[in-house]
Image (cartoon, rainbow, N blue to C red; front, side):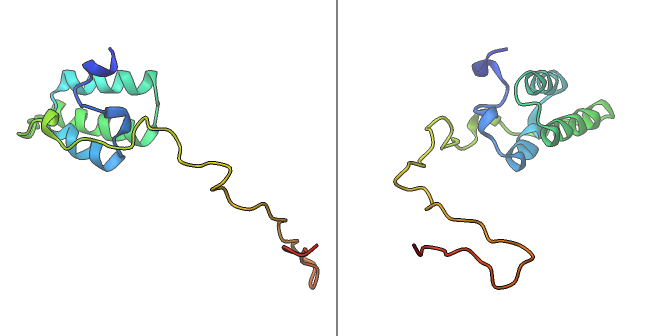
Length: 110
């Protein structure tokens, strides 16, 4: 199944809380497709637990909630790349020594 065929748009960029709410409108087949996709790609245990718990609810008689996951707000910040650059990175420092009093490194001093 390709990314475009997934039952939730931008599934791979959704946070766990968003996934938890959006899967409520899916049926058993759609949930099984997401579980297969998750195993093949991210294999994130918390996400798999949410998906499996919802699938168990449906198998025990729960009904999908009304709503259309394709009409959810767009997810931003997905494949844009990192904004971290050498000019914005933290300055290097020497870590503190542990267990010896009065012997901290000369931070920022030559």
